[in-house]
Image (cartoon, each protein chain N blue to C red):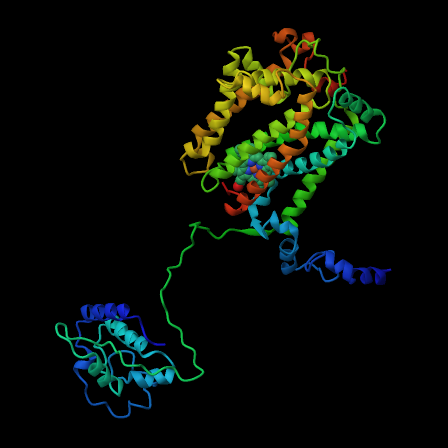
Length: 293
Length: 245
Ligand code: HEM
């Protein structure tokens, strides 16, 4: 149970020897201070330096593997810059005896003797690794002022929904959708116009080659729109920091609106220029709205 | 009387429909916990989180434009299904059915009007929604991709509207679509193929009508629904509504 994998023990031993530079515990199997032995030195003092410790006894008492206690002991000593407490009790000589004091750094503290397992009924766990805190996706979130969706947002949405429904129903009650004569392939109305959202493009047809006006400009336009987030690298969302982006968008938006209005109202028979107030409106959906039909 | 109401609201049927926390329930009084439950214990949780940023519920922030686009889509689906009961995508039947809608079908003209004007308003709403998103810089990281999804939604909205335009099979429909598809024929290299695929032939025929009908009532709504699901999901995953400015 308490057995750590061999390679980990080895690595720990090396690290310990390098970091502490302290004499290994087994170098001084000194006499145990009386009163601090088998009874378990639970009464504090075993944290730093202090008197010797009997790790086997502690392991048995707390149900913590001896190897972990040992590791903690060294870690604490290193952290506090204090000497490693001397080991006492059965485990100390056993450790040095079984592992053998090797050459070089001479610090072999690894115990390979079968450590005392936890007392029956005590479950122990081994810490394999510590995963640093941090999400897979790094989203930083500042604390924000929040409100409940119900009722605050849902009430607004419901009102907006009812408002839109009322508006649409009223509009539809008073204005009929257009229905002209049966489709006739032999009789092209003059002018023939696309739906209004394409009239900007149809207006462009008056200036450019159809390939440019009908395919290249709308194609590049859509692509340009889609690429906006990857082209605009400015992180700020404050309007005062985004003057260029806002100007460009506004110019294109206005241009599209002007072209659409032009194509809708200022183009008559033959798609020639016309004044709506002089020659009338050539825009079928709107004609029905105005009741001219 | 109130005894009967209590009896109904405590019945198994009622409590099985309205989940805990609902104001419809006998124990659904107003409390912070129940306010959370209203959303959390509900299919609504697929669309909304329990809480949103305070500035996000200000009408002046989103102008409800995204939500209204969605609502219009729902309305168009409902009215569209109604219209499907009375419409056959063949020539000349389509045109006859349109006329019958105005004369023979209860509320037929009203529903047709709602469908048509609703479609126009939806195109407008989506354009305006896009502009409000732009002016808020709401396409900036981490929302770049949701903007791209939005562009796809814009394109699909236009296509839905345009395919619907042909269906009345009148002079307006025929020639507006002629103008539109003539432009597509100028696509470099593949122009003829594009036009052929769009029209189901070399010119507009009854085959085109059937093709656009299927696109309009089945294919495009299916696709746009998927993209809307992605769109809404991303709004939440990207940290809710953007801002404040
Ligand atoms: C069928 C069309 C669309 C529907 C139903 C729709 C729906 C929505 C809804 C409900 C929201 C939540 C916030 C709000 O209401 O403003 C939203 C946010 C957003 N939409 Fe759309 N949208 C559509 C099209 C578009 C288009 C065309 C674009 C841009 C090209 C776009 C980009 C975005 C972005 C970036 C957000 C996040 C905004 C933020 O966090 O402030 N959407 N959309």
